[in-house]
Amino acid sequence: MIEWGLAALGLVILLLAGDALVKGAVNLSLRLGVPALIVSLTIVAFGTSAPELLISVNAVLDGKPGLALGNVVGSNTANILLVLGIPAILSVLHTSECNTRKTYIFMLVGSVIFIALAFMGEFNIVSGLILLALLSFVLIDAFLEAGRHRKANAALMLTEADGEEDVEGADPDMPWWQIIVFLVLGLIGLPLGADLLVDNASIIAQRYGVSDAVIGLTLVALGTSLPELATTVMAALRKQADVALGNVIGSNMFNLLAIIGITALVGPIPVEAEFLQFDLWVMLGASLLIAPFVFLKQDIGRFWGVALTGLYLAYVTIVLT
Image (cartoon, rainbow, N blue to C red):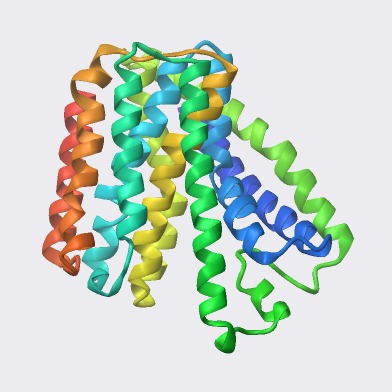
């Protein structure tokens, strides 16, 4: 039970430290004059994925690359089936009103390229650079698209001060000392939490006779998907389906391209046969399941919420057995 407690403590520290880092970095950037748009596209995106990134890097450095890959693949599967499923049970997700076609296509293309690279046997420096190049393309496209959207709606835009308040974690009245405290807590807490979670998750895997990859696909992946689940539940209750669907698609794309891309530069990530035979295809299949809601303007109702959640529970059962 001690290992479970320490793993849970590591996860809590990771989530709190990631939130602190985002708040500190966002307000520091805005104080230094960095536009709110750039902060949203870069610092917030990287900061909210910092826990997964630190877990993956720590896992590779500790000689447990299966946990790193399992974390990403499991998180992406959980994001589609569970993070969209549970909110849809609570409140119908009116995704028929959303326009996420382009980002969804980017996610599918990224998933296919990710699987193709996995069949090379391992993710190495070359694989990492390819994934990061794709990430750069996506970020540049998002930056240009946001710029065009701002110009088209210039007459309706708020003041720059109001725009800054729309950025996650932004507080125009935050004092300098508080910004520094948030940054320090984030920078100290992230590696500490990642180390606690990775070490104790590995001990749990050994104790129950399962691989690091299985723990990554289930325990660690589910834990690191909790922030996305919380965000999506609140978005569903507030009738903001675009936020819910966009959050999942963006998170999945960032997991594949950024987290494995950066981690592969730290050390090679061998791909176990189980990933090639089952888990990667489940991840891709889960992504394809939401195509009708993206392209045919269908809402994700309670029936589909139950179906998606049930599929995730079935997947976890199969992985654990």
